[in-house]
Amino acid sequence: MWRKGIGLGCEVYRLAKKLHLSERFELGSQFRTASASITANIAEGKGRRTRAEYARFLGIARGSTREVASHLELSTALGFLKEEDVYDALCLANEVSRMLTAMINKLAP
Image 1 (cartoon, rainbow, N blue to C red):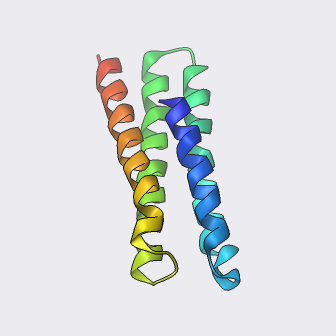
Image 2: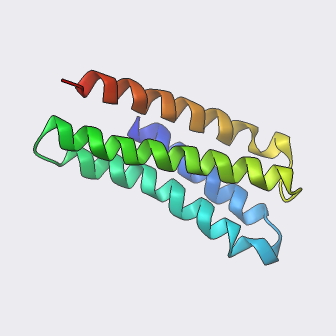
């Protein structure tokens, strides 16, 4: 799950470089921040003392994953990126989101 999140982050950083210069710092910054938050929250949650705390951080990571997907969809709707450019990243985001949901459900009391 964390490793897939790293892959998603790398893909998002690659895509952010493709944005037009005027959007690279605005939307690109949002891309990068949200993608970095995914793995950071997974790692931070893993270091917490209880399963409930871990699940809470995984929930935050899942939210960041959906945020990345939303930014990718917006960037294609606005014509900043092509659908074929974001396809792999969207697939990874969906996979990471499913993995996070499964782990959250596993940790539930």
